[in-house]
Image (cartoon, rainbow, N blue to C red; front, side, top):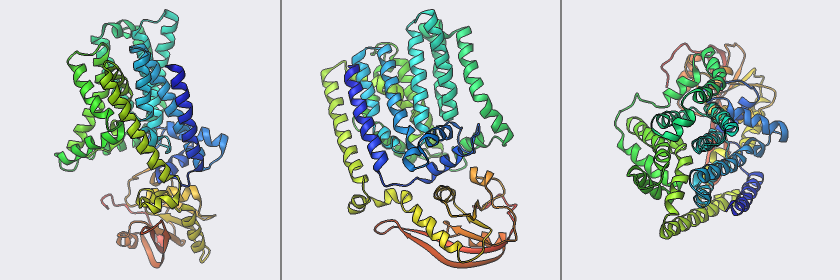
Length: 487
């Protein structure tokens, strides 16, 4: 089983790297933002902990700053996560369940997509899987020397996971309950070893907390604000959308199989530690469901559910040839669909031909946009270029607008993201070329600038029926607003 899995993973890694190296798509604004962070190493950033910036810094320092180098760690991390899931599942159950658990994960639609973009989820999931594997080994009663190594592994995985994304914290209450109510976990972690795990995790997280303290707890506040609890506190349509999206995250057949396996585990029909795996899968799903009901939720916010979930589904499926048959056909079908979509996405021409260009419009024509801005800058003497949109700012920062300094125009006095925190347009009497993605900010610009002259807009073709429209203004006498209520 392990040899077969190794061959499959090598093939998948090769395919994903080839696509990464040959795909024509530029960086999304979020990816460009993470790249910018990597050029300024720190223990924290406005909206995320620092791990993603460190990873991009590592790959680009070796391979340069091309788009594929920015994204390179994503497919590698997902393959490593698959290996950790296999090892954890083999500890919990057996090689057959582990084999199918690994395949369920590596063929997840969300993992296919996440292997081609740079996001915080890839590092988070590897840390979650490494922590789960360490816990599995500790429950299994390794020898004293190995047990110390697994204690270190668990502490490092938890700490580094929190430095990847605070969603790693979903694992903590389940671990605490296991220590209280699961005899093998209690024997392994109650006492000094548990304190060592907590100490290592806390020591790793401490520099990030100190960075937050020095920056008005920006990341923690941003994470809390993402909950957006100021809107109506009853949104059943958001719950429905979130759960429908999970079929696209985990798989058309694997997701309903997961729901059945969760019920089976809750009723005690699956061998221990199924109930603990079920808890690890269910907690993020239920927590984000509540958030969706009270506010909103993105499809990937419960992604930590899908480390324990493949193990639970794999073990449930191998109990019956019929279940395993359904799982096989489900994985085959979703892989065929993903490969078809991936084949279409490998070329700009095919994307345009089948009408999928709306899905990639934010990845297109940023070099052309940058060149058009450079041409405008050559027509006058500007001290700064200022963008009014975070994603536009970071894409232009990556692709470059020449020698003129790029800054972020501030909508409000309080920073809304890392660009407005660190690269805000300063008060100046010198001319500023304003790039307006939001076409309803003219009144705000007139409040902030003594003079404001509208120039011809920049329009960039993004494929059939799609255009990037940037309104252009020349402003002088800028003074940053003191207001906090502009939207």
